[in-house]
Image (cartoon, rainbow, N blue to C red; front, side):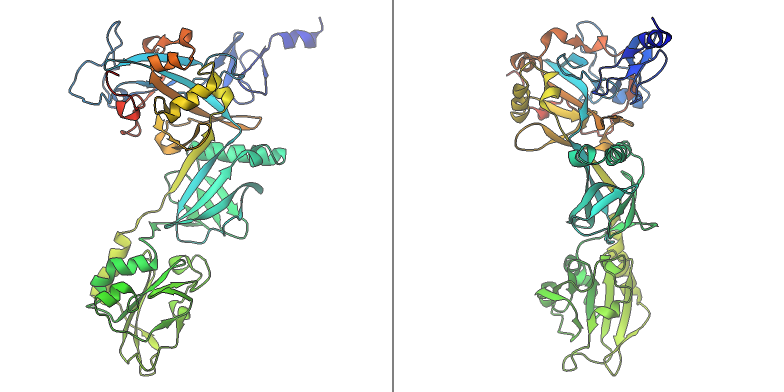
Length: 496
């Protein structure tokens, strides 16, 4: 045998993903998830258990034979019941074998089973919600990271910009570098790290789950209270005693108090103030300016630029005009002179209070990152020998799907396509494989009787006390409302 062959024989082959690394003793594979420990292939990250009792400093929940371990302590929902997540569980790729952990525990008087696996998702991505009025980019504009396309701008929602990042066409349908950068971008976002993104023809945005977006170097603070029309409706009654006209500048709908229905109902007389843009309905105007990073998400820096000459038959000298953005961050107060030209004057105390009230009603701007992926047939094969039955069981609400213990929204239609907030999941829940694909935790929880009925790998069910050993990572429950074993998650009733 040659020296080269001798060295190779000391390596073991990892079958946790399609890369099939040969790993030398003491080393880890290309994904850093699996290692060779004295000839044994081991998952390097510990299995993660969720239990509130650990976070609060209480003793670990005891697991005694013939006892659920949850002695009555007055907690009606048994919120400290431990739950095994798929974080650190490993995979079974290719899925000709049962999932790494299939564990049972008694919940009240019901035998439950949870099947956990770290799915390898080539078909996955994230949806990003960025709370800002500032212009990010137009719909369908390409989003770049490190110069590589990783997604696109979807649309604007109320006070937010939406991005779709990842997906199979970026992960595997482009160049190797595009796939690698896309996978790295998704991994960082899902694990709560900051990522700098650039929109073609748009802004540079630093995105981090749970943190304020940074747009073109400026940290965002407030999410707008509503569009200009909505702001008119909310605050009209607070303005009418102190001002003759209010214009709320907004990229979507700019509102004009005296024309708006709210102003009519409050008997605000016509002011003769005219603004540019396309009139939609009374007091509501589209396209008063171009999108930008100025007032209300427009490119307006001087609000007077959106005004037309005042109607000389209606306006009057001394007319009081307030102009304000949808976050209250920009505002200006004017009075018309003898030529009906607006002249700036100091804001009155009452109007300052009103402007501050707009800002007070704006919520803090944050970035939200939702992981989205589909549990393919091969992944489901690790749960049951007849994968379609798992799909049917999920649709029938007999099986609850969670990601790292977090509630997962299951999309209607075929398959098991889920979406989960990464902030509801334990830290570092995500990994990757160099195919490239994201590795994400997914758990299926159901009654043991339902598991047997759908053709589950019943011979591999283990009691949870055999799984929770000293080497597991214990984390507190992040979302107090998320309990995959809670009865309200299931269509079946107690005793059925």
